[in-house]
Image 1 (spheres, rainbow, N blue to C red):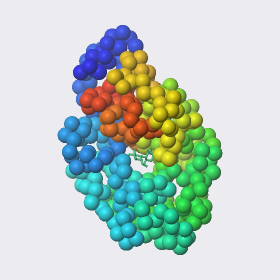
Image 2 (tube, helix red, strand yellow):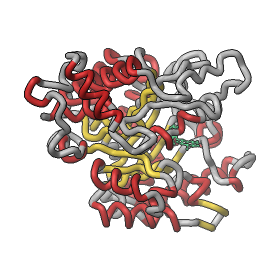
Image 3 (cartoon, rainbow, N blue to C red):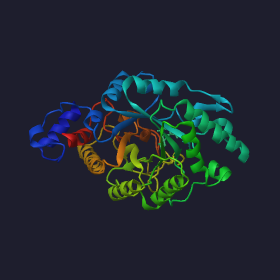
Length: 374
Ligand code: 9MR
């Protein structure tokens, strides 16, 4: 309620443009579902954790069903969780998110088949190329075929690029060579012919890294292998959202005939103690450094709420402008309290990057996005 009152106040003060046409000033939306409001434009997704999937958080559960038409498992379909030994798999939670999606008519984007991070324990430290190849083939084939027709899509390869657009020197590049990405898509297509297949990465809106991602798409297409879309993760910071790069990227990927998705959207409002923008989880700042920067422990000042609402509004205007190419916007989390950004790149901060606050209430940023569709 506090947020709604704040929003009404800023509307009345004439501060929010699209958020408050004169006829709607100070009124709550009649249909307050983002997924519903945007259903003719693109899917609206969220990231689900264990408590969500097991329906242990009833308020979150209501919000998820009401607001979202798509969901991505935040962690439970990563290889370290699914693939527990050479021939051992644990599909318990993955099966549950599939059932949750079916029950609630939410499309599941499975995340992710091939990623250098969160690898199974047994594969870490293995140096033999044959073993890596066996793991790679078995993992993709077993996991993708199990969920074919049950999940809507897969992030087949995640974060394969460096910031300069060259290929990351991952365990897969080192052992399988640069053709591994095409090969991953080939295996995924064979195992999951009824599933959409995507390349997913952060910062691929930035020109150099984008060029690397465009090359990946072209190589897959040139090999006659299927790629349906590209996911731009969208981990950005308040006041520095790269709108121009984002628009150029939507156009550039669109020209290759693939869908464009924003797959892990959040906007950090806290000082960034790292150099540059990264979602690389291995990048950590020293908790005790002078740059810790945790200014909003007791709450977010109205001026920052408003700036966040404006950034989100501008972003969604851009997404709507390109709705012929943009097919999904997924927020990386349900509420601010559950965001990974409370612990990255510094543990234990209080961040506010999403549309719903710690009390599960819509923030001004929610209304600024929602009201674009009124
Ligand atoms: O949000 C995820 C967090 O809970 C995990 O601890 C982390 C571990 O690798 O992964 C986070 O999700 C990442 C996603 O899978 C890929 N892109 C970057 C995301 C944020 O790190």
